[in-house]
Length: 295
Image (tube, rainbow, N blue to C red; front, side, top):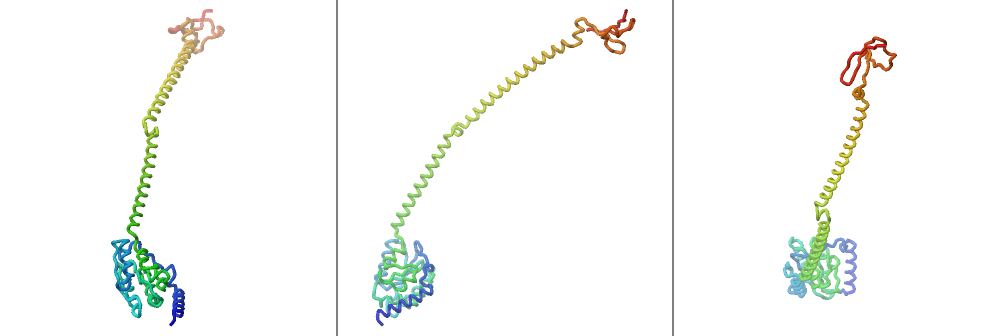
């Protein structure tokens, strides 16, 4: 079978699997930020294994690997890779799986376009990274994997964060947090200082003293007003009493006048009201006595 016919069959298989939705973006699972245990499927003592391990440990020395060495070409490659992927997917501690192989011809990379392997990767619950060959190589595994890396080295960089970069990011975030906290504290201090500078806070008794002075002034004003009114009322009462006394019948009697009353008690106002020999009662200032008309 020629290379052209082989590529045509791969293209036909690719379209068939795409129609099933195995390559759909919504099926892609996100990779963990910092995987604790990475599953690695690669050839024994291969350059791909060395590139992944060395670059990953250089970026994050504490990272751990669960390695499965398999055949990466030939008739045994597909079943061994499928078995290794399934074993790693069954381990709860494995956070991500990398399937890696160095570059090669179309025929050498053919196992990584096998339908059985594609379906096995599609069925994984663990995120899978495809790191097959070099940048131009594009086996079907690249399409079904949750992430495609151009090379095994690129896979290590995409799966494992760089400790130096993360440390620098943490330092920048910490400095930013410090600046934010410092700015917040300074802003609150300015607000507190502004509040404390207010007269009501700076001298809390000032308002009370001012109100006390106002109350004292109003009280004194009220006293003066009441005293004035009492004095005026007393003066008016004195004048009224004098007028009453002046108009009182008793005062008239004290001046030597007398009131004559007939036997029925009516006061005599006209001489014609009495008859000769009629007995009358005379009231003077100090008492009364009887008189008789002599006319």
